[in-house]
Structure formats: C-alpha cells, structure tokens
Image: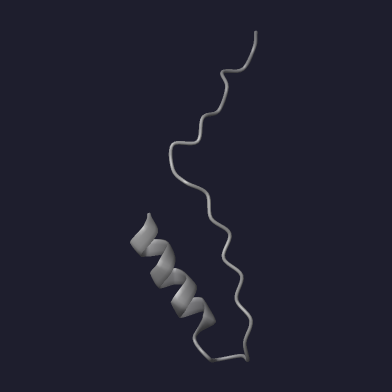
Length: 37
C-alpha cells in the first residue's frame, strides 16, 4: 500500500533571530507565528 502524498496547504517560512537573552526574541517570534497562522 502506498502512502498518500503529503500536500502543504500553507506557505512555509523560516524565521531566524539573533539577540541577547531577555530581549524579546521568543515574544516576537510567537507574535509573528500567531499572525501568519
């Protein structure tokens, strides 16, 4: 039995952040993810 082909329905985006600890990188990434999902 062949597996059905997986189809991506949403666009794919990689987000990279650079910065010091406790400067809001996780908060920023979380907000962007919520807006785009």
